[in-house]
Image 1 (cartoon, helix red, strand yellow):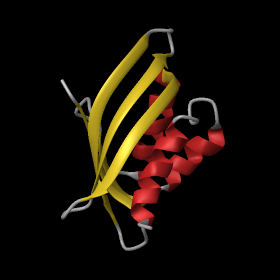
Image 2 (cartoon, helix red, strand yellow):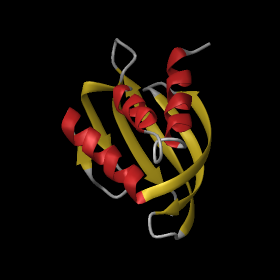
Image 3 (cartoon, helix red, strand yellow):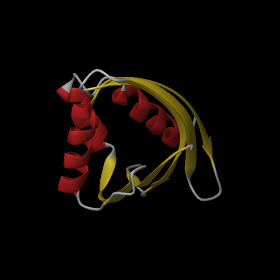
Image 4 (tube, one colour):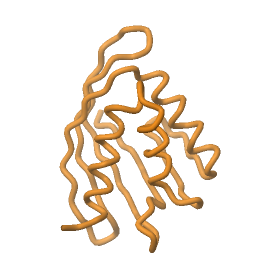
Length: 120
């Protein structure tokens, strides 16, 4: 079993809970290293622990309900997750997206880099 594949799967499982569960939100934030970089699908780059926490707090406030499916594989440079998500925005609008996340990890199995790409 690849620990890092399991961490990515855990990230998606927690994402389905984090809109309504503070412990799940805290657990997602704890998956990231103190030097992590997150590049969101909307072009925002976040590079500090407080920025990453704020990013996820805002994301899960805006997205009130999420359901993910994912497939995670190791690559030569890290890990990649193909995902599909259906959700409900804070104002009630429904949405569905398909995309790919790219991850790298530090020596402590903390996420050091995440880039999210939504298919157009």
